[in-house]
Length: 441
Ligand SMILES: [Zn+2]
Image 1 (spheres, rainbow, N blue to C red):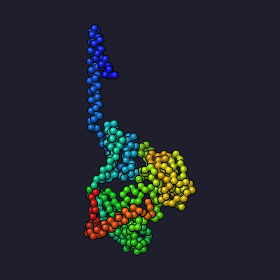
Image 2 (cartoon, protein in one colour):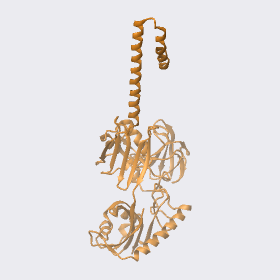
Image 3 (cartoon, rainbow, N blue to C red):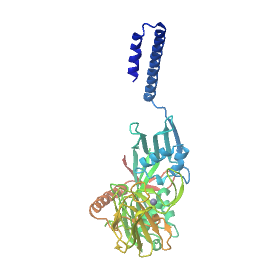
Image 4 (cartoon, rainbow, N blue to C red):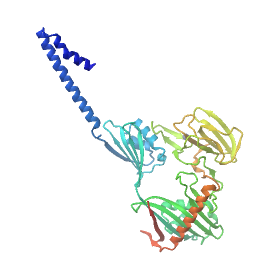
């Protein structure tokens, strides 16, 4: 059209040479057209420049405060509602956002329109979760940055003294306070503490990771041994699955027996909590609502297991819970499984703990495939399923048992090596501990 107009204006004067006045006007018009053309090309050049010049981003940082979730932090950072939703969706498979700790840092880099271009969450100094907005797709893309850690193993030995508490005893032998609760938990799995006698001995192998040698990142109890006059000799070994979120990651005896025999079975093979039990703040709207169960994010079709033996009392569909199953257990408590893609058992069926009862789905009111696990106590009140002890299996089998056997051999080797080293004084304490750096990763 423009081209046609220019052509027409260009040739028009040829037809008007007889008329002088009209010729002058034509010449002026031609000038205006040419000026407009220049202006348009200047505007195009400016638009092109603005499109290609480096984006000026403003970077904002905030930290998690007491009793806060990511919603509050993102809101304080002024992240728009649609960006909040996109960030949560892009990161929830990689980060357990329901488990934030005070002081953890959130960064956002916003463009001139206030839209988030880069999101950065650092749960500790050694790990950074990054989201970049891809300019082509306008979608966030995820990247994980891990800084090298120093891994240390330490062995702690001691005995129970008359009138001493377990916690106090663990601290007195040098077990760091940050790990004493975990150590006590492992020991209590197997040993009834009412039967513990003064003089009973224990030995604990801890593995802890540090950033820059001094900032504690994480720790685990690789091994716990207890030799009691009444309770006898017990050993517990940590099983490490290749999948760090596997429900099988737990302590077992040398024969692969779970340390808690009466624990409930986990409903899934993989444990990724996307929403915990309790009052939650909706990630996008900010509304407060009671969440009467635990949401586990899980791929569509993953098997869902009955948490314990019992009778199926509900197996139906409704618009909120989708496909739903409820199982009443021997003690009259009831477990609920919601949003299933398929149900494998009908009302009246007797099921055993660990039996597949359905598949993970996203039916009913749900934003993506997950399992909502609910638990009602004998009085019919919703309780936090996490308050129950859950295990993946009473006994490891197959390739997991083979892997545990290999890991036990390695743990024994580490114990022997550590036993042969000279004890070193713990910084700021009079306690001596056998410790070594096992790797830098
Ligand atoms: Zn839920």
